[in-house]
Image (cartoon, rainbow over all chains, first blue to last red; front, side):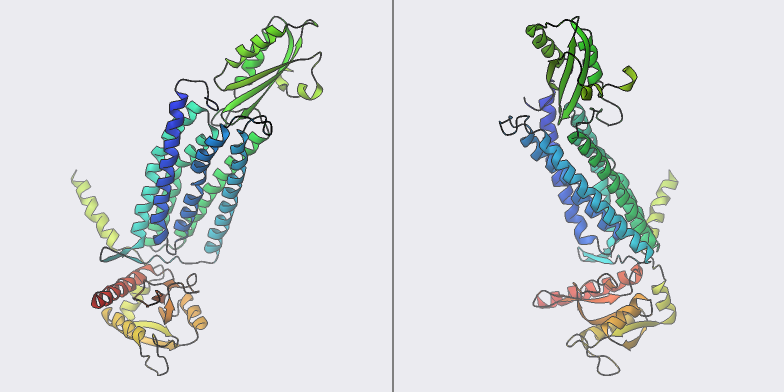
Length: 323
Length: 154
């Protein structure tokens, strides 16, 4: 199957990830529907609502991107469509970042202007109860199931090596933090601390900015062909080193530089090889290329280019420590 | 184990005491027995031509005040002046035929509607912003009025 790692469990994980994306969308919409009528004058609830609206983007992009990215390459798009999702992510992450900055400014202004949030009564089932209690209930609904949804997504992301899914999962898992901040804000208002609401809103907007920034960095890195990184983006992915070692071990190879790019869930590698002799066997190259592909289930293609000497630009890709 | 059983009613008691007013409006009205209300002429909701305002909204305000054991101290002015006084905490309530989508939504505390017009506009009052205990009491009163009115129609 195109666009998923060659692992027996990958297709199952993809199906699960799609289901989780749909569940996310319905769940987020339910939160928005409940939050909208009760947000009243609370800046924290307004910020939380904006955050919820923005969190509709990653699961939607996952579903759309999953369809587009697995299209076959065409003469017009000879490398296929995997990068379409990365391009869309740059837009989504920029939106996240900008809205986060706007909300930060908005919340900070309300603090500076000493605006007291109005949270009054809400008519319900023949009673009028304090809207703050309803806010807290909706915030619990927005924070607790999200945590488990995030953990389930994380498992699929690990099988699929899907960075965007992993980022979405991380945001879901951390959702209880912003929901918790908003709850503290609303309870604070209940105790007559007017500033608690805007202070919570500022915290939530910082969280939105943080996730926007990390998503933007990862999407830009993707489009710029940054060296592949592990799923959590903490370390370099070991695949380029393993490919280099593998090729270096071939008896006919004098020197090699491997450059690997991430294309969605797949990896594509390019190896410039300086052979020991002037003649190289084409069969040998094809065979080594095929075996190199089997080093990792994500490797879709390994191109081996035999050269007399390494081009200067390619040589710069070598890690300084093994230079 | 017994301690856990005591925590729950304690929480409930705290919950009933919420929300509180940051600037103590409810407590002030309870001790001074005075509800400070701004009126601006807006027939048929408010007729502010005489010293003692007449109309649907002044009647409602008087009923709300007597429920809390207070008398109404009226002051007249333009919408802008009154909303500013409201925001500065010099008034508790402003009436003048405002509807729920009023332009003052971000400066004043908009109450729950007490009536709905034939054209779907919801009639509200403007309260001192952020004095949530006071506003909740007002909302309870207005919502009850709204229910009684729609019950009477049906």
